[in-house]
Amino acid sequence: METAPVVVGVDGSAAGLDAVAVAAREAKLRGCPLRVVHAFLWPAFGAYPGAPAMLPGDTALRKEAEKAVEDAVAHARSAEPRVKAHGAVVTGEAMEVLVRETKTAQLAVVAGRGLSAFTRLLVGSTAVHLSAYGHCPVLVVRAGGAGPRGPVLLAVDGSPAGAAAVEFAFAEAARRRAGLVALHVWSAWTRYSPGRDEPAGPTADGPAAEGDRVLAEALAGAEKSYPDVRVERTAVEGSARELLIEASKDAGLLVTGARGHGGFAGLLLGSVSQALLQHAHCPVAVVRGAGERS
Image 1: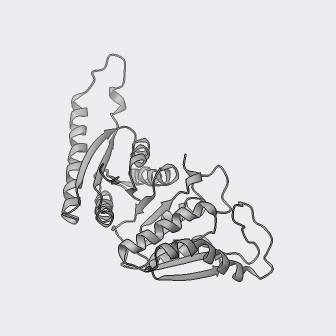
Image 2: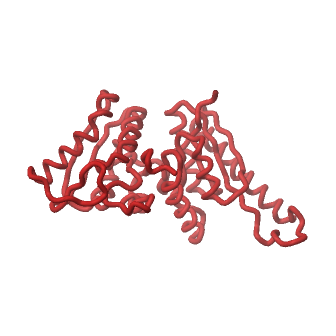
Image 3: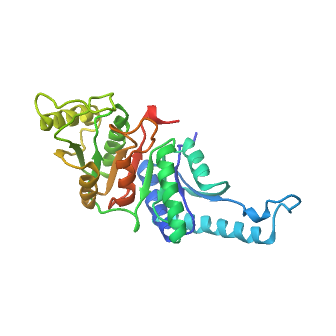
């Protein structure tokens, strides 16, 4: 049985090719194949009663889609010659196609930007949607592709759902032979207890001690499983989004959970995660907990 692939979505843009190169590297690190996917939606002007199944313009558009996939596969093979890469043009809307692809993938990779001012909005929305609804971890690649050769930056919130992000971050650091920076941001006025989504009162020992405790408990299991990963723990007061975005300048990858503490129960992707997708300086991996997957 073949190992589950890394899946990357492409749209024919330069940003899409940057994502392909990153996805090929991730496939190499995992020793798995790479699946390059382009979602193709037939133009609406052909969808009227009595219309032919395929108009002349449709054929040209389909060929463009196939060419985009061929170029992306060639780019992947050039970036990582040992990776088994194959492509597919899948009929359907991009968000639906990519979410479906994540059901059989171990990682999905997508660009954070697209072809034009209008397309950028659509591709950005696709990245957010995939991060919220994907069935596997989602890696969103910034413009220019991979980040600096820095450590893996892990956003630690101490929630049960965040355990999946911790495991992913340690595994990724081990694959890359990189260090791991675990950052927990706390407020001087509130704390969060595991299993809760509402703020509780300040701790008796103070928020700084609570932050250290959250880090110790969140990382304990993964540190035993990955003893060779160098870990730097930091608990600091402030704005999670601002501090994580600043720290991402020196990171090779930022790993975050999808929602975490303080998120609305019906919101699958929290405001901090969305801010990181938009403004982080390195690729961002969003990892949903088992209880958050639909």
